[in-house]
Length: 365
Image (tube, rainbow, N blue to C red; front, side, top):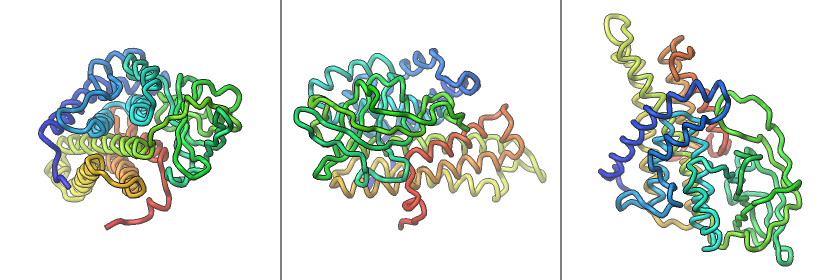
């Protein structure tokens, strides 16, 4: 296992974090007020030349493209959570198509993603009960020259606006399969579309999606092995959690350097500095664990098992960081002048997207 990022990866992560902080974080108030992503954000994201802008055909220096994808997800977490997750959901779909799609599927769709960093797409993966991919109950069954999809998904991003969706389930043999859904018709019913959320208010989200008798032509079934692509998508979610956690702890730490109590800045007191330092170290360790998995060549079942652990730990770290940021700043942490409460609320929502309560209660050594 590498104990540090490569020099090029460090530089890339640092530069992109700074860019996200300067260009995307200022949209916080507009996103919260309008409950949508402003059009100007698309231009800002395009200027950043993020991974996936060219259908994931370019890598970061000599690093695998999956590594660049996750580093970018973490960096965008330092900006504005709704913007970051909207980009992530779009790129996750592009990633699955690029890794498991046919040449015809790639030719049809990846250029569409290249033209819009927030291209509306949706990954129907989680089933709202903490089930990893190996335990999905959604079925993708062959019916003559087509496939029938039945199942339940929660949550679903871009439910009514997605121009293409990847629906993940299992076939009759239990193998993980994915299909491209271009027209859901009346076979997908959503609930929770109008509910107000504590955070990610700029994202369009359905709490639940019930899929019943969705017929998909055989040419819309992704022929490649989707298991590793799905693991990379889940690791990118974990990376974004680390970005939000990093933003919350760094902001609280910088604020604590200016707040004087008992004759010195409060960051000088162990009760303030040690919890923040612990969170920074936990995030650093998880970042390296993510990169280690991406650089490895594990069997699908072992890759999923280790991904489960990393996602669970990242979900915990982002919630701890959001809470610690607010607690460090006291009353200043909950006023709109500071983004601390924004990250605190976002942490709770983001951590619930891919959540396994059993894994989250275990400690791994």
